[in-house]
Structures are given as structure tokens and as C-alpha cells.
Image 1 (cartoon, one colour):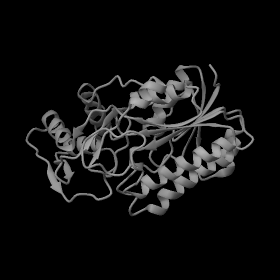
Image 2 (cartoon, rainbow, N blue to C red):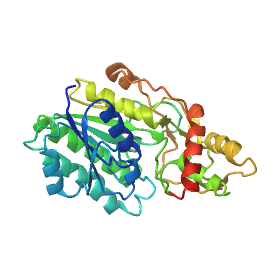
Image 3 (tube, rainbow, N blue to C red):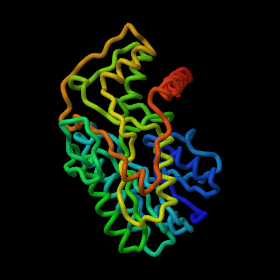
Image 4 (cartoon, one colour):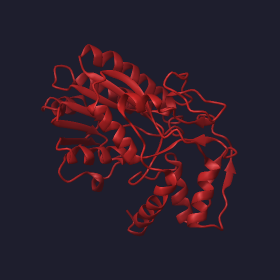
Length: 314
């Protein structure tokens, strides 16, 4: 294996913990930095080294990165399109300045590659539910999207000067086990939690907006493909290319959890795109990425997991 020691920022969180597990399976030593604001200690793989800390702490990052880290998976972030409107400063401080801290700490280190968790939120809205490729307009509707796009641009420029490979993976709507419940992030997790509480799902707008839902282990696959790739600098959409409306998600979950409940409709959120579906042809051809999981085949697993978490009051 080309890489021996990885740093996973946000490795106690939803996607980061799954990436850390896979790296350990591949025989790579893993260090995790997470402030546990969203992540949980129970998500941290036992064989990894865990450090409770903040990516705005430059000295901490420098010490960890200079301890023979040769690849970084940067997952730590404030992940909320909606909440970033009200907390734009906190969003920028973690998402942008935290990323700049990582780049700064990589100077004179042994890091060969950074794989950055970007987002579909960097793109402009689309009137039609057609897949968007990586060249689609970059015109974020939210501060969250702005922070992700700015971090990408800094990453490509600074990493090149540091002679470090930088690959940006633009995640679409990721779902799966371990997603922390908040009222702002992850429509599937939000709907399931409400339904399990006997409450109807709340849909913003008419519910006809289309999304691209990708299972977390397919996102992990994309990260591993990016790690193994010889590509030095590029960005890739990571989704399925399959569009599903919010109404369809609500109908599916209501039918499985509480068929007597019907969605409540609220005002459209202007910071959220009408349509967001990934054209993944570039990732397929250059990374060999191929989504393996389908929403309808994994949704029961997610419902059961969240129900168990609620039963155990985790």
C-alpha cells in the first residue's frame, strides 16, 4: 500500500467514521481528529488513534500531521445548508479557515495527498432534474456552499505549491448509519426521526424537488478510489445519477413507519436547490467509481438503526 498513515478529520462523524473503518481494513494506520460537536465516541474505530480537537487549532494539526501522516481525508465541517444562513461566521470559521489550517500545517510534511469532502451545494440551482456535471455553474445558494467552494479553490492552489495531490469529492445527499440527527441535515434521517416520534414529516416547498441519494458506503468507495488514483488534482461528483423527489421519500418512509401520517408542507427554502442530481460519468471513467447500493434496498436498515438508537436513548 502506497500510504501508511492517514489522518481523518471528523472521523467520529457520519462519513468520516466509515472511511476510518475501511482504511483500517486496508492496513493503514489511522489518526482521527474530531471535536465531538456532531461526532460520537462510539463511532470511533477501536484500532484508530483518537484525538479530541478542533481543526481551527493550528498547533494541534501541525503536530499530528508531522507525525508521519502521508494522506489526509478532510471530512470535518459544519454540515448544514439551512443553518449556515444564521451562523455564517461559524460556518466559514470551521469550513474555510479550518481547511486553510490543514493546508498550512501540511507545509514541510510527508503528506502526499489530501482528499477533500466537498458538496453539491457549490452548484447553482437547476430548473430541471437533469444530472449536473462538474462544469455546471458554481453559484452557491448558501454560505455553506460558499465555504465549500472557497475551500476547494484554496486547496487546488495551495496543495499544488506544496507538491501535494488534492482531490475534491462533491458529495450529493448521503444517507446511512450514524448520521447525527439535527433539524437541519439529512432529510431521510430527519423524516425517520419525526415519524418514529409519531410526527409527520415537514416538506419545504411542494416536495417535487429532486435529490440524488447516495449510501454512505458508496461515498467511502469513492474516497478509496480517489486514494488509489494517480490523479494529482481534480474534482468529482459523488452520487448515483438517480433522481428521487422529496415527496417520494416522504411517501416511502410514511408507508414503512406510520402509514396514518401524511406530510406537512411549509414555505420553500431559498437557500436549498430545486434540483440536485449528479452526473457521475467523470468519476466512473477516471476513478472507476460505481455505486453499488440502492435507496430502496438500504432504507429498512437505516430505519432499524435509528429506531434502536432511540430505544437505547443514544
